[in-house]
Length: 215
Ligand code: AP5
Image 1 (tube, protein in one colour):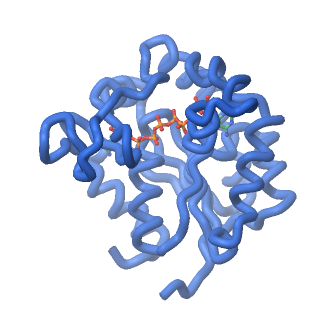
Image 2 (cartoon, rainbow, N blue to C red):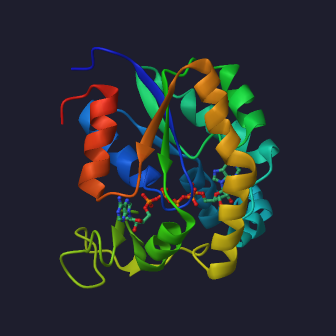
């Protein structure tokens, strides 16, 4: 049973484990995970009008303009299943988005997972994603039971923006624009800092401990 509302966001560089930890929290707290990147990728896959406009930004590892991202995320967070709480993975990632979020949500926690650039590059090379259900694996740190296959039977694939150029761009944007979003939440007194350079299980333990959730 949820005794407290959790309206939280997870910040961090690419491959810091935002999605991985968001799933643990979602399962434990029975809350939805809202991934801005996933919402945007769904638009691209649907080949919607928005999808066609944003595809190029995503493949290059650039930020998708706010006029698309803000409304997409807002519409998702205003759905009924988010009324008791949610975990937002990857939104906001610039100050202007953080201010936009403040206009319709009272965040309870902002988690930032810290990881070095070298570790990001190591992790992205080994990441594989299920083409059917979206589950995330790592060839070395979180391998699938069966080679190249998800537990649901789907085929595992590389993500389109996990190319060296796009990774470089995503890291650049993180340092230039997203890091200061953590400062914004520090000033508000809701920032929780996590050392992401530990095993997946140890990161999970640190997150749960700092949120005072029993694992
Ligand atoms: P998004 O999908 O959010 O990508 P990202 O921020 O680059 O983050 P990733 O999904 O790559 O990594 P993650 O931190 O979730 O790590 P994961 O758990 O998968 O965004 C994609 C794009 O969408 C952006 O580039 C932009 O174009 C657009 N976009 C998104 N949000 C936007 C916004 N707000 N505004 C504008 N545009 C936006 O883990 C990575 C790998 O490492 C996995 O293989 C995992 O198994 C492994 N791993 C995880 N934790 C550990 C650990 N502790 N030790 C070892 N391995 C680990």
